[in-house]
Length: 273
Image (cartoon, rainbow, N blue to C red; front, side, top):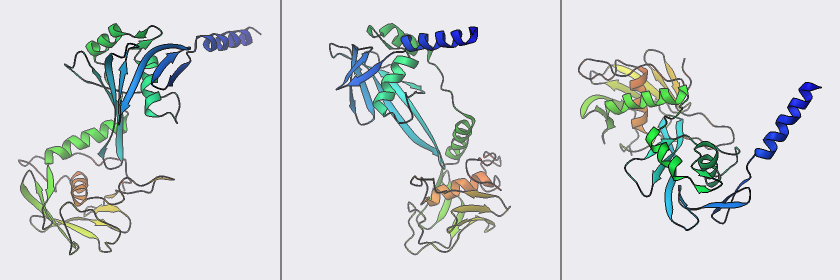
């Protein structure tokens, strides 16, 4: 009986202290009281006080890091003090909430820079002083590590299929289509596997066009493209540059700088064997 009373007390306490957050026609309200205004352009939302003075903006970022790993977060910038921009995680009231609801919900529930009295300038400034760090999962952290290593290699592919790292030739593609262009993607119309060789004509691996897999000479396999259930594929047509980058990750001996390998283990966001 005592446990039941505790559960009921907790339920009613949470029910009564829960805030009713709404945004209608650009006006943000908490429990029926107007506290701020919001306007948006593209993925940027500007929050204003009730006198329509812009105070800060929230911009949604969604980007590809490497392969199919993406990162979504927000950038917060004060209108009256633009000395720094914060990159922060955001929360949503539900899985189906749009960006506006997520921005409002994050500012009120997570960051607490909007409350029942309006935009809280003190909390906003404190947020910029503390500069909280984002909480990235292991998969995203690993993707950023891989991306950093790839960027250091600075891989490019020229108009004849030659692969370069920081401007120095390191290998080349074979079985290229007649209409090949360095910025082209490998389409489903390519029936022949695209092979990769180093500058000494040693076979490094190949891209299997029918399965969207990269296979190294050492036997490692990585799937660049997998059909997402009910969704459009992110990497249905990978670029030649993306193939060369992934091969450099799979085979650390492929591309070296000053005789030091700078690319680590294969990421596991695809299928590795």
